[in-house]
Length: 154
Image (tube, rainbow, N blue to C red; front, side, top):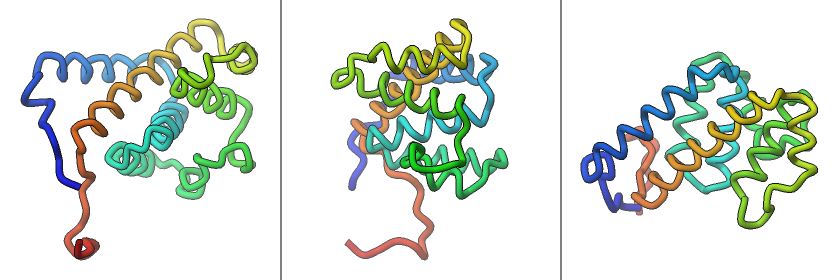
């Protein structure tokens, strides 16, 4: 896969605005564990290899358990996720797949049962922000780093 665009260079003000929003999300009070799970799950859904790679690396650097990260895509089938994780991951899926889900009341009820309204608002903006990043990376065809020894011949 070859990169298409360098959006950061072509639209620097807009790119910086997204980066600033991401910085505010990180300071919003959402736990880093939950933020890592949300970013990883949305990136998986959106098929963003660049962001999946980035968020796995960041989560590992922050001390998240590797096995937990391996199981994010199948969180419903794993005991590694508590009620807050599950509600946040369900909300992430519903909001990320908004055209298909319409964000149903059941997902809202689940997230609202374990998060305050303010936390749901913060979580929703965090989900929207990672979705912006995914759309930038996928449309630009950003390629995640690959160590030389791991590169396969095309």
